Image 1: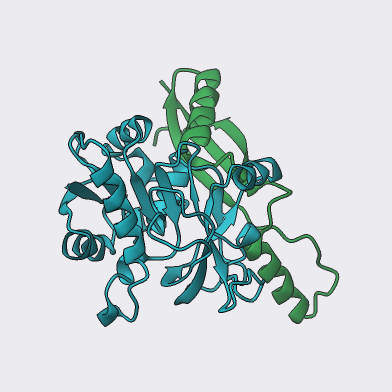
Image 2: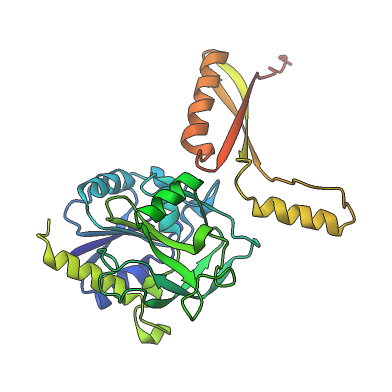
Length: 234
Length: 90
């Protein structure tokens, strides 16, 4: 199985992502420079965290025009799994692969901490290894993670079960106190309609081995591997 | 080609919560300006643009705003295009 990590100027979680994909998940994981125009043959495309193009104008606003985003759009249409983490989520929103937008965190603080996440669905390619409602712990590190979409879009996401993760407390309650950034409905991660594109603010690649303080993020890699092993690769 | 000045003002849509505006408002209150309400923070992008006509400059500026300068999911934008003042030869 082959995965790639798209590298933009200013990406800074690319090596963590490549390490988790290769050493923990077992992918052959390549770095792919943003100028690349051919992403054929990859079974998983990851857009990593960081500050692509300095987050100038808006987070992800410039990265979405990178040459590599053309083949990412095509891969998304073909059904290839695509995971955007943190800045990668912001890029997917700007690129229109996921609905909504990120606002500055409520309170304006850059939040870096471990957060609780409630797994809302386990019948997806990203969460099949989780127990229903499983609580996961992962780190966040962002200034623009305040997920916003208009009420119709939120109703659509909720109605179609496209919210995969919500910020929650230790009891699994999605309280305002457990919401680190003001996101609507404590939303931490959403998918596209087809379910092959996931954007999430928490960092599974930073929580894939116990030496990092937790390995709950590896559940996402296990889910993806199970999915890819079950379908013809190509 | 003529030279034009373009000014694009980008604002969060009125129904979108503005954490930056709320913080500015609270800061103004703490400075004693208690009458302040409804503070919103946007941004202004200004640049020179060479184009064949005013209409063409406006069309280009609209395309730039829609594709990059503003995110239509959360932001509105206003475009002002004016003829650049050309300096008289020395």
